[in-house]
Image (tube, rainbow over all chains, first blue to last red; front, side):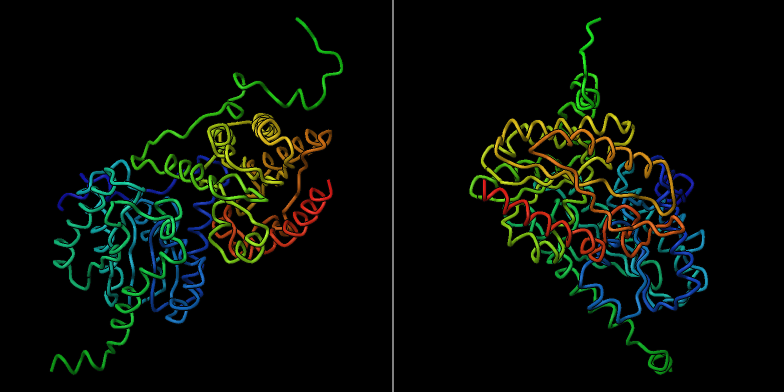
Length: 229
Length: 236
């Protein structure tokens, strides 16, 4: 948990344009511009798990009405998210809740390093946006059958469960219940490629998430002041 | 050196497997550690055992994602279509999948092939060679099927070398299939590139993958074209 310089997963890093069409930077630039125009109450930041959610009907149904912005980029690691947050994607906005969902793509890092990277993101958010509540979503299981990446993601979640409560304003939410069946398999009905969620998969995770978001958003400043008296 | 007189354009772009990596059947190596590519392939093989699709969609993430949106149920389920798309697949991966069981148990009338944009490091000629190798394989395995190759879409927010490469792939493939009675290239780009050279995230949400709105624009004409092909196949 200490020594961010020693945790490679907590080092901010932009994605290099290897392919040649500069799409990562173009997406980042668009998000920075959105910060100038929008006043989101909820900010989603992360990888393709966040990004793809906006393409399904469920986004318009449940999350748009909460004035939510989606800053997900497919393939992102904790390092990439850290870089984006440090380079404009938090400018001029004051969301009440920030939802963080990242870590499954950190293939070069250990579970402990990944959790450290996610913690660094939560710390950055609470320091840049003092009024925001941070919700960190647990990493989902992946692969059709049990495999080392499932174990790794479970370990990441385990670290997060014990570390995040020590950080103020931050909580961990596990949305992965039910995806792994009793025979150890994941169904393509929930994850069409055993990693990315289908519409039905998103519906399943949206339920606990939307409940928590509504609960947080309904805590008005007046209620908070009253509770302190 | 033996020169073949009147070598057709088809011969020039259809490189042999050994010299063109894009045309050499190659499975995806499981680098990440969860075996997802092979799982999907196995699913497609076993799924096909009790299905009788009239149309088979095969290719990369652009095919795969199509299956997740309403447009699939609206336009392609009624045509009895199966979807064998795998995200990230390059031509050599699709070639391997089709050579290793995904065509073994079905006889679709039309195969819709959409692949090539992820062939990073390959030239337009190599990618065309890969696509044509797939067209030939489908002809060998499904002699009565028609192959509809979809043009690779432009990508990136602004003009860039990959747009040029993809346009060149489409040009080469169009020429290569022009002499074939069992295949053609359909340009499905409805005009995603605006007059200032930009692509909108409302059509391609990450400047590569289609939004549901983008799919509607692509699929309406594709659907009409497919229906025409199926009717023609029925007449034969």
